Amino acid sequence: MGRSPTTKDDAQALFQSLRSAYAATPTNLKIIDLYVVFAVSTAVIQVVYMAIVGSFPFNSFLSGVLSCVGTAVLAVCLRIQVNKENKEFKDLPPERAFADFVLCNLVLHLVIMNFLG
Amino acid sequence: MTAEEWEDFRKGHPKAASLKTVPLPFPELCATLFDGNAATGNPSQCLKLQHSAVIRIQTSRTLEEPKEDNMAKFSIATVFIASISLLLTLTHSFSLENPTDRRILVLVDDLALKSSHSIFFSSLQARGFELDFKLSDDPKIALQRYGQHLYDGLILFSPSTERFGGSLDVAAILDFVDSGKDLIVAADANASDLIRNIAAECGIDFDEDPSAVVIDHGSYAVSETEGDHTLIAADDFIQSDVLLGSTKIEAPVLFKGIGHSLNPANSLVLKVLSGSPSAYSANPKSKLSSPPSLSGSSISLVSVVQARNNARIVFSGSLDLFSNKFFKSTVQKAGSSHKFAKSGNQQFATEISKWVFHERGHLKAVNVRHHRVGETDEPAIYRINDDLEYLVEIYEWSGSNWEPYVANDVQVQFYMMSPYVLKTMSNNKKGLYLASFKVPDVYGVFQFKVEYQRLGYTSLSLAKQIPVRPFRHNEYERFIPTAFPYYGASFSTMAGFLIFSFVYLYSK
Image (cartoon, rainbow over all chains, first blue to last red; front, side, top):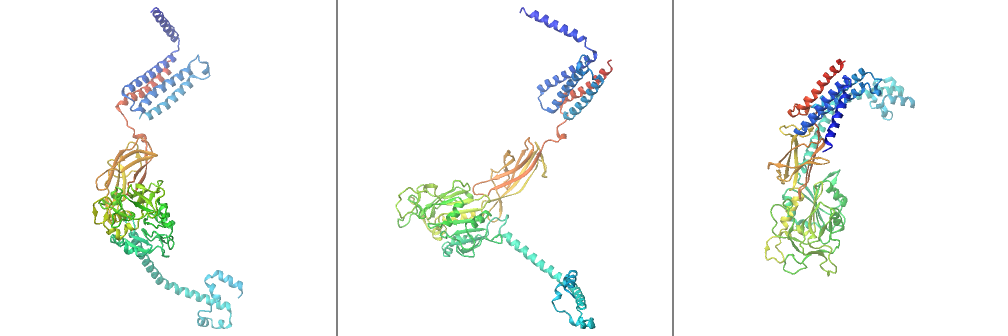
């Protein structure tokens, strides 16, 4: 009981620092983050829906969820490559990274459309 | 003209080869054409002339040829017609359409048997069989000629024969059975090793003691003199309408002969008439010093074999069972007050001979077909989860025509390594059997199988291969309402991708 306010304060302090640190993130990375959040939340909604109505058109379910997950994964990859602080990809121009991202997305959606049924 | 010159000439004119030695065929013609030259005796000139004569003869031949050709055509046609009619008579004798045997060879030790067993033989003849009686040591006995079997059935009423005449031996008899022909073998107290060997090959072991006969102090046939109880009144029949006919055999069957046991390793052999629990096999003249090797109902008196190729065999330990004397005899079983005016032998022998010569219990399956429910054409391939119907018509030969076979235990299997579907078929009482079922959710190469083996009936074994494929890409269900959220999610992700691309590219 005595620890509860302390924990609450700690959590608040943690979110505060997290928000202030995130505020410093470049805008293009924030856009990517928003896009990832959109994809992941769509995937979660579908999983919940499947849990309610059952797995009958299983191929449709798989393609719906995998399109979201695949999108999220590709977006995260793009984020890693265009992040200036990431020294590993400093030789890779962001245009090239974005072109790779677009190409991968096209392939992903082609497969998804095929599998959607 | 030298020999070399002649050789050269012969090479060019093969027809002239024989002319060197034969005299000139037309000497006067030769003389008139080449008067002077011929006189000089110039052989080369004369040969030239001969050559032209040959040509002339050939031309006259070609003129004659059409006539010969016509003759040849005519003779070929006659041979053709004759062979077709021969073929027709041959196919009439035994065919799938008429499975009953026609020609039967009867081998006897003694032609007196022909009259002592005449009731049995005349009943066969009255049913349309052609009996060919031969002494078992007749040197002209042959079961086949030029690879063709001469007979459809064989009756061995020659228990004491040590060696058959002609080319007949154990191997020939087994070969006869292996080719689907039928056999009746009757032994008696002095059965030879030959008969015992044939029986042993068919899974029937006659008592090895040559002096042993079946004795039964419990159910012997009562006679005026108290005998040694070797004349048995047997009534332990197999319960099978197809083997012994639908009319129950009321009177016991008189049996006097040797007993046999069945080889337990052979699953094709059946006891038709077995000994009573008090029967045993021993020498009636000597005192029984050791327990008999065969006793009780394990003694078989008459047995049948139906081979896998549907050849049928009857073994009887008693030749007298088929005799006129036993057919007509009255019978009273010991311990029973009822005296039958006539023994069951005639009915038993007639019924068992009807079975063995395929007048009964012969099934055929025709018109095997299958199709999807609601269609009539037979597809080359099924898809998983298709509903299909499998139909087969089964008929039984009644001795004169094919009659619908009615049974409620015919099953069809849909088989790939193991039966995925095993279904009892319904029938319409007219011989048409039908099963409808759903193809399992497994694809591969399946078989429709009908394996029908019932006591006394010929076995049916049908197999038809059919592949089963999975759904085609465009055969899956589409636009399912339940799946709309998934479709929406996929398309919204795509739209999200486009919007994201624009926002990302123009945000700077």
